[in-house]
Image (cartoon, rainbow, N blue to C red; front, side, top):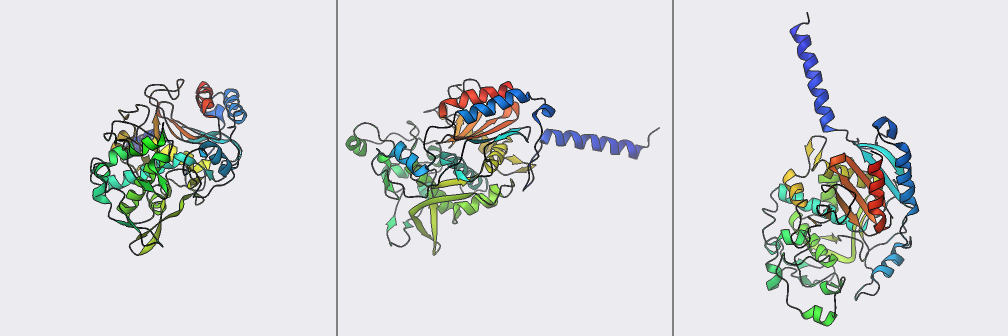
Length: 391
């Protein structure tokens, strides 16, 4: 007959093992365990086929990012780059299943621009600000949190949320890209980003009611980044490092850049207000491993190995469809609820995506994260379909 102490220890070990299996594997800093696909119940031939497909479907855009930007946006007014660019690498990616790396290609350690995936990192620092009470509610107006801003080196003072329309904008509509914020920031007028129709009419048109019309617009995202900088009273890259990237064990090689003219005076010191993407250069420069770690964090609804870095409530809000565009949550969480983005993926899958194409595919139903870099946008669904066929 077993002693009560031995029985207790056996039960405790069993409970601990179950808890650990439910929690899943989280890679420690500086390392990430890789497992052969077959040992995880995956079909290695099909997984290899998916990887070959990703490599074969490299984006046709040039590897010179400054040239690619000029080709994509050069016909727009005020299209000149004002932030850093860099030559990109070859098609690259990582497949993470149940926390373990089961496939990779290219050079996952290479630091490259990730364009509008940057918006998801901006979303994260705002989410932490809400969770900590620095922002009381996403339904508060942004104007209440943003004082006059002095531009460093010029003495100019700007009021980015002072117009009648801009004073009515909430954090919620800014995050959903339904704000219709008006103005010029860092030399870029809001109407110049992806202009529609006659630009003279676009400049003088009546403003849409906040929340009623969705428009992808980096000027407005940059205004949101400036507002978040005012809330945190420190550079957003420092906030992201302390609150998100260090806790998830990210490398020390990522950088978050702004524009050459996007410097403000904050508490007596020059601080760069970072950009939300690479539309005019800048944004996050990051490797695929760090992108995958961030994807794993969002897969686990903001929890990293028992530590809640982003509240479940924030993740829930980020995954709630925007009424004016049901395929979009908070930036830059693209949703699949209507199956338009990825017809062959589950409805609950979502993607952090940016130009390039750069994307972090997150699939809670299959405990799967896939980072794809420099793949043709139209090839995304087929790539996901091929990976899922290997499970």
